[in-house]
Length: 331
Image (tube, rainbow, N blue to C red):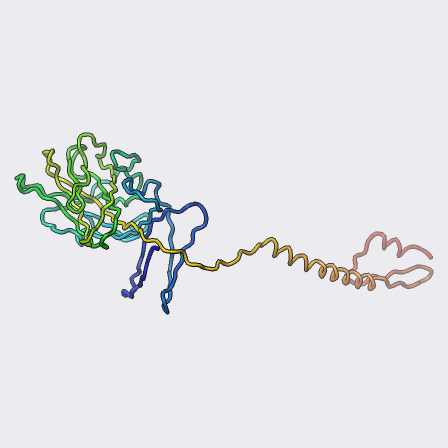
């Protein structure tokens, strides 16, 4: 079940878009809209895109197919991006709506166009093209304001999101180094205050405007909040960190029976066409026979003139060579 007790509220003409990622086996795919009670169900448009093969997180284990519902998509360090600015017509919110404390963070960009490549390293995935995220996401970032070098002032930059409690979420963090050279910046990624992943370092191969992302699964628990943070690593001299984009997708684990809908019977076109032609053939033969007999009777009008046999031809009957010979034949 993708949506339950859903209501499309009238919001001054603004559309409501729901986005899901589904694992679909080969074959037919059907979407059911079932009204509840005396209400009714409707939809204005449906779009289907093919997701990447490695979209699912590697640390998610379940016997059922992965179903994701997009909750948040944020352009960190940049402005809101409308669907017309994204190759796949996605909307990206500005991070100002979710940033807990904007004072210690500063924005960087816009920068040069990112250099897309395709490979993986230590759980990080390089973005092969702008289907992962548009250029404008990777060309801007939010970074630490580290002008105060006092180690006691080290801090994390945190974004907070309202979610359903006791739900699992796929969090995708987008990175593109706009502030330093390759391997110069090492920092940590946190979820709900817990260490999640070290980003960068001497063994890192991501740099020089190369965009990449990292997936992780985060549970909301009872708090109905998920916090995502970045902060400096204790084993580095470069007290800095950066983030370019965030996506949060709820993992749908509720199941529901498929409605018992009567499918329309398919019509065999060949059988229908054959039946129609079969019933028309006798009628066509009778019509042709009738017209032929009518013309034949009108053409056989014979007179005897001066010892010659004269055959009159009605208008519309072609005169052949054999008929001309009969006109000149003596009795």
